[in-house]
Image 1 (cartoon, rainbow, N blue to C red):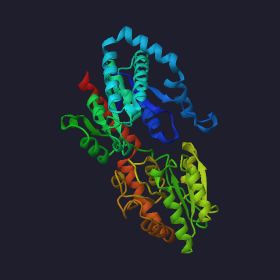
Image 2 (image 1 turned 120 degrees about the vertical axis):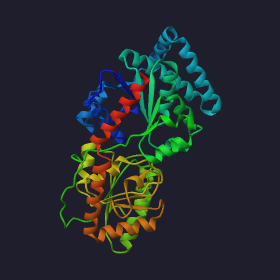
Image 3 (image 1 turned 90 degrees about the vertical axis):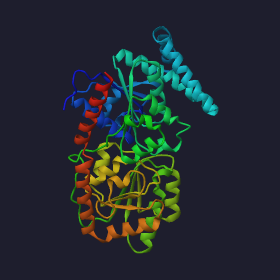
Length: 412
């Protein structure tokens, strides 16, 4: 489908765009543009990666994106002066909302005033871009700015909710207010939709739709491996406590004690890197665990092709795009039986799910995959089919485009 002429120019607001961990937003923007949507992008923070660490696509997006923090105090004051002249009543509404949030969280009152100034900058930028609808991923800091923008300026607003971070501090983040301010809300899973409904008044449930994420199965596809290669397990994700990578180190140690050798590839960076490397040293796993750091889209795809299985023993997740990528690449996947993951992986059919924090079950599943190439092949094929059927990027962007068409037509 193509966007009709009645669809306004869309402005996407992201905390950091483009970003290694949010490649799916880049794919979404490009896919919607290919369907005739006119989209401009803004990022609160600049992409700090060196130029040689990003792809050509990412470079083009970075050059075209308005970055708020590059304009600093001068940009904020210019936006304030412009808003006083052109939207004085809206500015008062925004100020009242920001002060209300600050009063509810006195410790973080400065944060809400920063958000107010950022909202003024977004509104002024949208005016220059002649964009009338604002879309934001994640109901966290970016949505705080976006919801203030919606209260100040004559625009419409939509929000994509992922979970679980949005649901961990709903009062602190004023989640219910964001849902109430938004004109419509999209959720990536039934889990995310259920939690959005749980934390919102029923009078706003009619705004909430599901729009799944997806990947391109033509880009992520199975690759043949040398049967003599050692068993290799891949984990892609930020090195943070939420991802549970320390459990994988324990699992590698236990498998080694059972004379089962595996090599673990950790792709990503983050605050847990130092403790993970220290843990590796304590367990004597330096030869079995490889830290690759943060890699771009093309580099990650190359590592999928060299791996036998994928593991992500997270404590908190939405539905990770990296799981979809790994499944599409034909890798048998193991992840935690939490939040939206069972919507993607049916245990024993399209992959394995384990109880979060259960190292015994994680070791058992890794041991099964290590010992049984036929099981790896069967689960890998079934996982790929599941992604092709329900998490195909082209199909799901088509659904997202229709959601925008329908919802924006009602607002016109």
